[in-house]
Image 1 (spheres, rainbow, N blue to C red):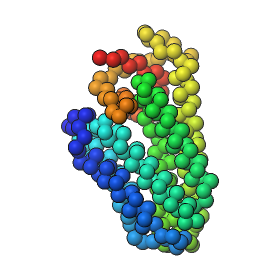
Image 2: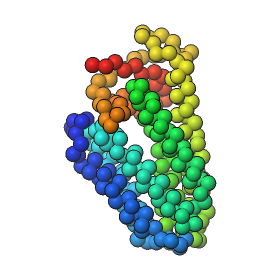
Image 3: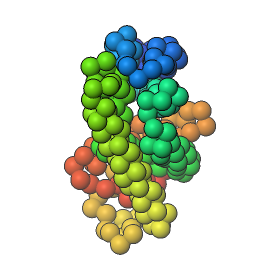
Image 4: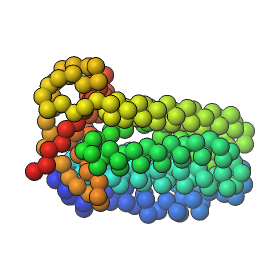
Length: 238
């Protein structure tokens, strides 16, 4: 297992490579609406690398650097490609602006609550949103669908918009619940709900001015996957 504070890992190397090579992907996108096999293949490779580094990280252990770099690389790649398609007249600017605004707001929210010791793992809807964004770009680049099936990539683009708004609203509702709930010193009611258990996690890392609690983030994601909400996290310093 890789130590959480390790930077030089294969997963992180793939993530950094995806981030640094993103401008090459933007350059490969054609200036017309006919699509490009080269751009499509490159996009497929870039998106596949996201799944590969995630698989390696889960198999050998996640790191603080990876928890920060992976979503950053995804946002740079996807939003960069979408704005490039806007500049070539393929994508309408409005849905891309909505998605970009959502990403900015949620990123700022994560930084703020992260400074208060609260982890915000990606929700399932947010992961579906990213998938729809990737598919929208892919079908807009694929020559077989770029012109003859515009409804396909336009459909995925607008589905991504809906998921972006809904998942973003979920994050903000959760933020309000956390703000209204007072952190309990003992097991007591929080926001009108009686907690059923308390989970303690160790090994919190501090990275680039942000608190990244990989253990709590993982446990929060697992609990959410089973329909269990994490209402409050109380972090105690060493």
